[in-house]
Each structure stands twice: as C-alpha cells, then as structure tokens.
Length: 69
Image (cartoon, rainbow, N blue to C red; front, side, top):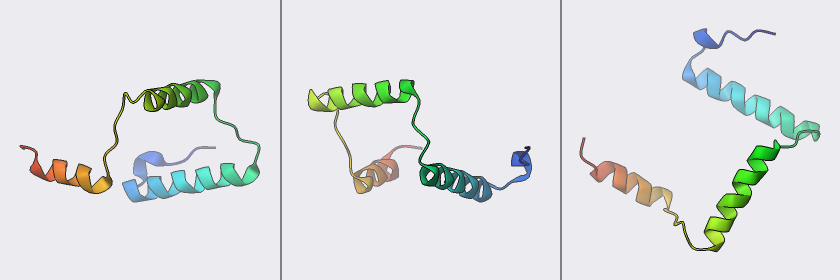
C-alpha cells in the first residue's frame, strides 16, 4: 500500500496518524517495542530520583513568548 504523503497537507498527515493510532489501540494486539519500554523506565527512574522537572503548558508558552528572536 502506498500513501501519497508528499501531496498531503500537514493537517491531513496529522489526521492520518491519529486514525492509525486509534486503529492500533482498538485492535488490542499492539504492544510497544522493547526499546520504548526501556526509555520509559529510565525516564521514570529520573523522575523518581528528582533529576527532572516539569513545566506547565502555560509556563512553556510564556518562555517562548519571552525568548529573543
């Protein structure tokens, strides 16, 4: 199957990705690859050790508004 990705708009590509993910979730036979599980585990360990911090969406927007062009 070939999808005409190069002729799709960004909005169309995002919609197609959303539909594909939704379809995979409904099937129930999808499981993330092993490398993804390892990355998530490492991220959780960093959170547990207090090595990372989080910003709210509003904080990120504010930083972006205030940064120099």
